[in-house]
Image (cartoon, rainbow, N blue to C red):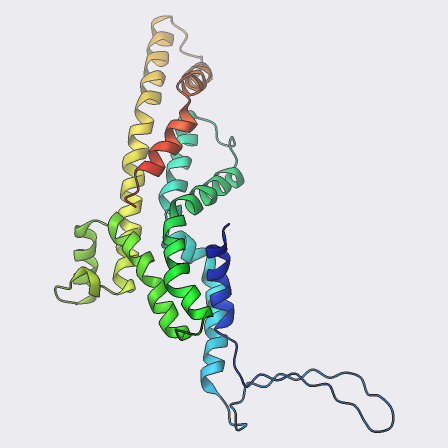
Length: 256
């Protein structure tokens, strides 16, 4: 993970920092007292600062929903669904395991999303660290590249459906809110993943059909076709370097 990815996490952590937070160590005049840590969320005059409390709550919410944000607003959804289809089409249920598929999906996601993370770092994080933007402005500016990425992968029909569902009228692409863009993006990603899964299934279905027909013609009706077809499907997948083809097709399917 490059600095831009780490910087995005730091931006979330910096949202809770406030000048009103204090740390004090108290000692009595006679004997040294144990150190005491006190954290105050009050303002400069000691009055309660509601904004800091809301920022703290917002940070906790982001940390809780972090995995969902990665799944719903990046290329992770399409990658994991397609890799799951590959495993099912091969007929092996535990190879590769779920951990390997999710790990490979995360690695590919960081590669695909790297240009977006670099733009977020250059346009939002670095100006925020230089105190040129406030936290709210940095979040708003940082959401721009992510929104543009999702818009490039989203079908117009899905956007129109959610606009109609929300009761909104015709809206230009630059003014679409994330509450419309995110579900439209997820729907388009699922559709694209299922289309790729269908194409992946076709050659393996043909192998199953040929094996089942051959066994029937030989009178071996008690022999499960899956037992015979599985080695042939694995052989075909290895000969054509299937994993490289699938990964390359997945990366090239995204409009960056």
